[in-house]
Image 1 (cartoon, rainbow, N blue to C red):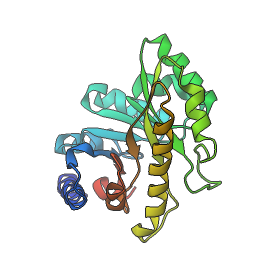
Image 2: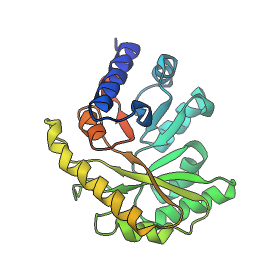
Image 3: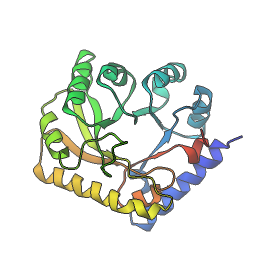
Image 4: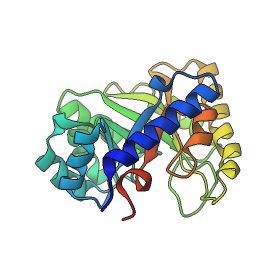
Length: 229
């Protein structure tokens, strides 16, 4: 049986050590427990152990679990691919949507958020490795995307998200994390209204230490907390 509390304590220690090693305040790094395919019961165990942020990938599954657990029990992050026709559910259930990669999707999120008088926090997803198998705006179009949605009144862009190609050696992820930081700085230099770059959502179970060294403020950890699916 997976000892979630022990795992969580270990991960938090690793975050502190990694942050200290690069002169960062560990409190600026948000740990998101990735709970896809995990039961509401297991997720509740995680919350009881001290997880404050939970990340989900699938709308229908997450809605059912959040209804059981309670929306006020955690800060909820949608980190999977989002279809426009599911936007209304993502807006109702999630505090952050990490995977906005088109104007069409942003427009629909804005429309649905307006209906419930909400300002939806989003991140712009970048296909940092230019992989056909992954979603995300291309590096070449991400700045145009930011400009195109800046006037949407019911969304607030809080930063960028990426998923590098998977490597068994975490160090190989570093160039991709550096690239996302470069994109962040390029966006900041343009001073686009309503576009904040306070968050970089990058780093998972096997490479979050490298991501922290490169400036991540949100790490998404599933297996190392909840065990394998």
